[in-house]
Length: 327
Ligand SMILES: Nc1ncnc2c1ncn2[C@@H]1O[C@H](COP(=O)(O)OP(=O)(O)OP(=O)(O)O)[C@@H](O)[C@H]1O
Image (cartoon, rainbow, N blue to C red; front, side, top):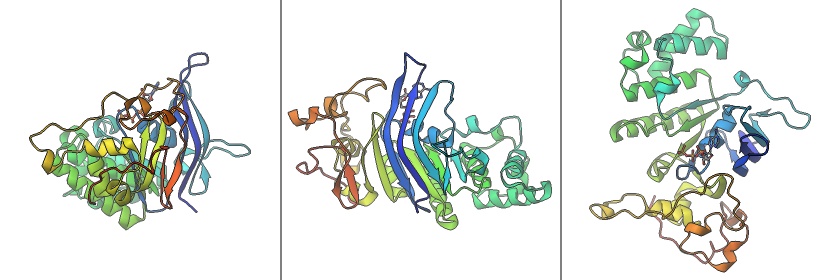
């Protein structure tokens, strides 16, 4: 059984009469211990997907439909099902900017201890010992001293490590990481990616890695899902997708990656932008930006198998042959 199964996830924002749809029938599964990259440009629906899974969308201004089950527990109330209380769900999330997720007025130690007491029911002394070992597990030296530090006293990379430690305090089977390395420099980024990969391996923890950076996906993930305009447009094992992308949008993202050959020259870009939510698109959602669009693309496209391990939402994917990169 998959660790996470999501079926027909739809998200609408706004109030009756002025609603816009941000996600369309998103289906996905994540296996235990698997690292899955969720990629796409800004506005493609990656964050809305992860916030919906975490139960962090405001129910007063959003509506979620569909079914999602994590470790046998339903995330939302379905027919004849009860919603599982959030603290009973083995999942946690880390964000792009740890300062917005960490509480500036409490020390690192008190935030860790509090999480362990609430999520794991630990007593004070046990929670303190576990906090020290979690800080050690995320590579923080002198954890005893760091317990007493306030978030603003730490570097960006260290704050991100603390946020990972707080996430681990929830003992997650699924970690959702939303652009966790975007706000740090490349050396720290590489260290944090290695840390997340190592922790996933040691703990058998699955990771949903939200990023716009295919370089990060190639280094970190086992499988990738490309999103565009609130829909999944391609998915498959990272090595296979990057070696020969099946959707013109994935191919465009890949062509926009800086490479040694592109140094000094102009980087390829995908002209245009992601359509805003709520826009009715009768045919292929990427048609208006696609250099390969043909008259047959003006009908709705389905996510169909390209190979036994891959699916693509493009009627032309069998005839198009995009250049990929060696893994
Ligand atoms: N609370 C909201 N109310 C209305 N629209 C929203 C809300 N949150 C997100 N959206 C819209 O949903 C679409 C998908 O947004 P989302 O944040 O998931 O994109 P993303 O792929 O994660 O981009 P980014 O990398 O910039 O976060 C966007 O067009 C966004 O404007």
